[in-house]
Image 1 (cartoon, rainbow, N blue to C red):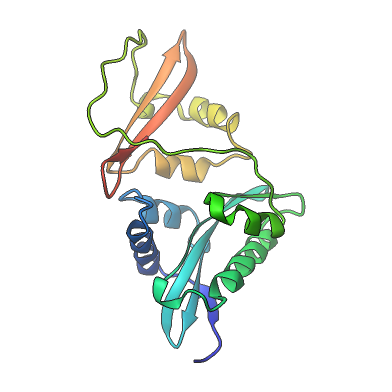
Image 2 (image 1 turned 180 degrees about the vertical axis):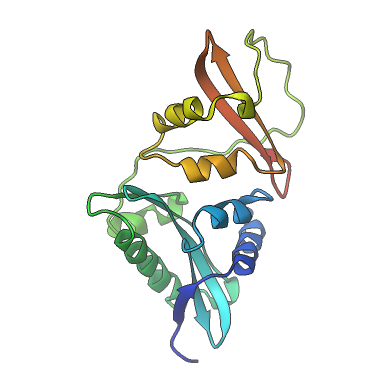
Length: 208
């Protein structure tokens, strides 16, 4: 085998990588690949062996202050060869070079890999768990009337989103709320935006 080649991914390869994520049980959204590729075509790195992509990962840059690493997969046929470590550190360095010196990098990680990420310079910031609803839940007794996110003035939505995120992410936000296989709702009280949610179609069911 020749030495592994690290290179940018094409749009079709990003879709392929999302397919691998589905095989891993990650249940990605139907429009995840096109959404992220649209905001940062340079944000995906492949590792190639003998002309074949055998792994990849995202290094999406939201702005100069924040980027996010995710979708990190080595195909099962090529694991145990050190390719994951090579790709992971290359992605970290590539994304860091695209940010300001004071920029922050975030990532999602399975618990089994937390030790590896700590050794790579990261620290745990929060813990989240995915729950799955297999049947219809009882109706909510909420009194507010949700409105489609598209009816919220853009400036108001972007300013609210900024309070929940490390940096402005206008490009991402505009793509995220416009996914074709999605529904979006916002809660507005006395003209003030209190929250919003996107429910997107996935390989299995929907994610909120």
